[in-house]
Image (cartoon, rainbow, N blue to C red; front, side, top):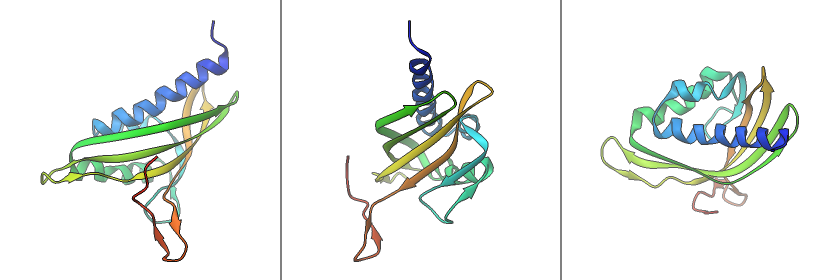
Amino acid sequence: MPTQREVDEAEIRELIDKIVEGLQGKDLEALKKLYAPDIVSFDIKPPLQHLGIEAKLKNWAPVVTFFDQVRYEVRDLRLTVGEEVAFGHAFARLSGTLKNGTAAGGMWVRVTYCLRKIDGAWLIVHDQVSVPLDITSGKGVVDLEP
């Protein structure tokens, strides 16, 4: 019989899988269910922070608008799970085919997830997406692979 921690970790991994499914299905309503209403997101695009679920969904909206086919990959997900709080980190890449037919290979980013168990369900309350920075040029390094 699995421990509660093993059950919780499996639920969180399933939640991350649902992010993949939601993006590949271009389903913003499905994605909305995975985040806390008051999520704080430090996403790859400005500004420094995005507050609330509507701001988070606004960041995902271009996926629906610009892509015909979407591929979203999450690699090397590592989790630390407590009773009511968990965090994890992984590498992720958004790629696919744009509506104009152009293939978009995407870039690998680093993702950190912070989750809370709210009313018995795990939700993402904070996430951060980043790329390494080349200090000398001041530019992000976007050609790295895990």
